[in-house]
Image (cartoon, helix red, strand yellow):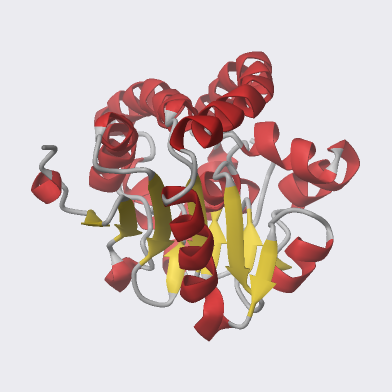
Length: 268
């Protein structure tokens, strides 16, 4: 039996073949700090190997799904030796998060209970079925902090809404409501906030109780298409993202966020 007690930023509850996986840093809107980033790399391996799990319900604790990267930590790391080491480590780890997620055979149902930004949004969008709150804000906000959309945003957004829309959303970091996201096919369902978990759980329970191998292998067949795009795009987008961490524009954006002011970009 896999012991999930080792996780500090993720909570896993198993009941009758269904695992509810909760990003659990509610005090920080489930922002992805170093610890959560490490755990997101490992959790998919453990879930994939868990014979007691037939379906996965993924959500966030508190009022957000995930606010994305920890921008204040980015500001503190800029230009330091620690920052350089973190960048190198993150490039490989970020790739493995996406690859490990797509290798999970069990269906993953994302319950986007609140705002989903950056890496948090992309993890939700790479899930198999996405149920979002009508009022949740969804965005890949990498450019808002002066970095490239490297956490699979350049992979999944064009597949879901087409290249033209995807480029605008990614280049502008535009916020989209759950209702708007459902209309354009970015998510499967948009429901009132108090119905997100019940709707997602209904779908997850159906899949957990369904024909296991027919469901899993259907998912894997479709994911071959997603993996082709990952192989084509992810390494390049992550490499560009790592380069952009060294720019003055990123430093300014992260510092401005921490200081709660509007950034002034200089193109450096």
